[in-house]
Image (cartoon, rainbow, N blue to C red; front, side, top):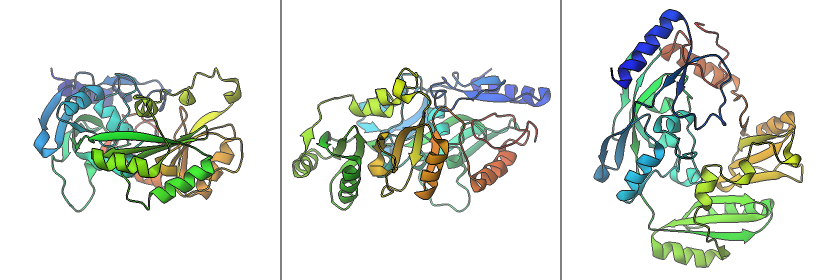
Length: 355
C-alpha cells in the first residue's frame, strides 16, 4: 500500500470511528503551533521525493514529506533557490509543513511569500477524496486559487500529497552591511531605502544594530554596498540562524530571568507603523519594519498596539487568533473540505467534532 493509499484508508477509518486526525510531518514546527489535544497522528514521512524538476522551467514538484533541506540542496546544484527562504528548523522541516505553515524568511517583502510561489497541489480532503488543484505554470484564472488556500491552513483543510513550487535563480553575490542605530532611526532608514534603487532583499534590527542585506549581480551589489556605507558583516550563518530561529533571542527555554512571565509575540504591521511606546523593548524587527518580534507580558497591550497600527499579533507557542471575518471564511472552507471536522488544527475555528 502506497503512502497515499494509507492516508486515504486512515481518513476513511477515522470517519467511521468518529475520531480526529492530526496531519504530522516531522513536528519541526510544534514549538510554533502547539496542538494540545487527543488525536490520531496522520504521518506523511512516506510521501517523500522530488517528483519532477526542470531547471529551465524554474519549477519543482515535490512530495509533501520531503525534507526542505534535501530540495534546497538539489536546487543549489543548479544555482537556484526558494526565494522566500523557508526555515528548515534543523533537518526536520518538510515541504508539506512549509506550505501548511506559510512561514517565509527575511526576504519575504522583496521576493514574495510561500503563497506566491505555490503553483499547484495534490491533496486528500476530509471525505477521503484525492484532489488536484493548479498546475506547474503561472496562470491568470478566475475564481478561488485553491492550491494557495492550503498555504497557512495548518492542516485544517486536508492532507497535502505533493506541491509544485516556483523557484528562482540564486543571487550571484550577497553582502550584509551593519549600522549602529536606534530602532526609530532604523525604521526611517529602511523607509528611505525603499525609495532608492538598491538591491536590498533583507533587513534586521536588534540590540541597536541594523543589518541590511544586498543581493544580485556582483558588480551592482558591491557598488551599492559602497554607496550605502556601514561595516561589512562576515558571519556566514547570520541569516540562516535568523530564519531558523537559532538566535538566542528566540529561545523559549524560560532560562532568561528577565523574560519570565513574558510571551514572544510575532507582530505583522505596515512597515511605517510606529514602534510600541513602552521602552525598554526586548524586540527584533525584520521586513523593513513589517515584522516585529516582541517579548512582552501584557497581552492586552500587544493586541491593542497591533490593532492601532493596522496589524496582527500572535504569541508564539500559544493559540493563534483570527478575527471574525477570518474565522467566518475559514469555517466555510472547513465545511467544504472537511465537513466532519476530522483534521484538528491550531487554527481556532470554534468547531466541534462533526460540527
